[in-house]
Length: 82
Figure 1 (cartoon, one colour):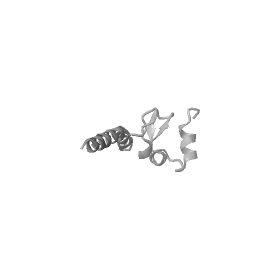
Figure 2 (cartoon, helix red, strand yellow):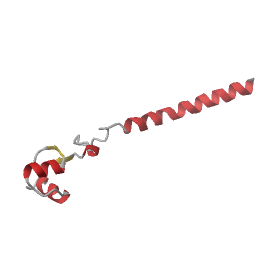
Figure 3 (tube, rainbow, N blue to C red):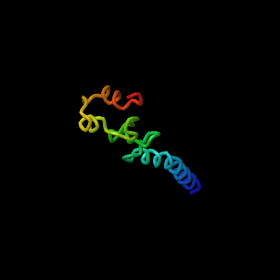
Figure 4 (cartoon, rainbow, N blue to C red):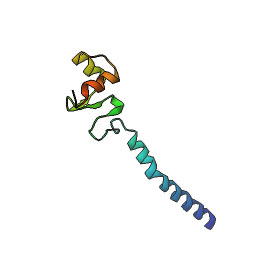
């Protein structure tokens, strides 16, 4: 009986140890949880654009502003030197 109580206690303790890391993993996997330092959500395709001073989707901005839909053109358009 004493051995059974020890085994049950050990199982409960081990289950409790893993729950925090599992919760953190679930929280970090939530949509929108990958915001960068400017608040842009990379998993949704947003990147910071200095020129517009906001998060933009490169392909949407390219269509709106009439430049080629490429990362290079987005970077060129959004650089603070433009």
